[in-house]
Length: 104
Image 1 (cartoon, rainbow, N blue to C red):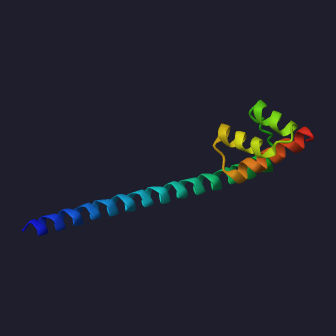
Image 2 (spheres, rainbow, N blue to C red):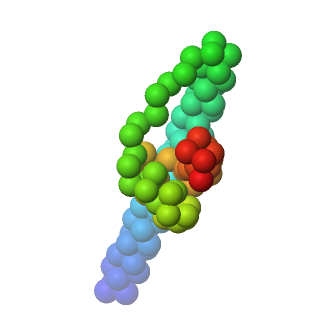
Image 3 (tube, rainbow, N blue to C red):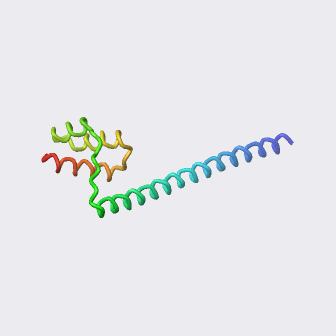
């Protein structure tokens, strides 16, 4: 009888672990979907703003600009991501644009 109780507890524990992993995977999947949707919305908004000829003043980012002036692009991208929460690609594109505007 003791073996059956132990086996049942082990099965219950394995089931709970698998349930937790499945829940975590679903949560991560939902986060990825939300991030993709937000990215699509931002791209559409950028297209509308560009079409209307509206210029949006960028946030002041003195640390990012300093790193660009010093030729430290990777650190500038890292700082940009830290300040904005942007993806790596968006941060790189933004830093490249900032560097082009500043002539660096």
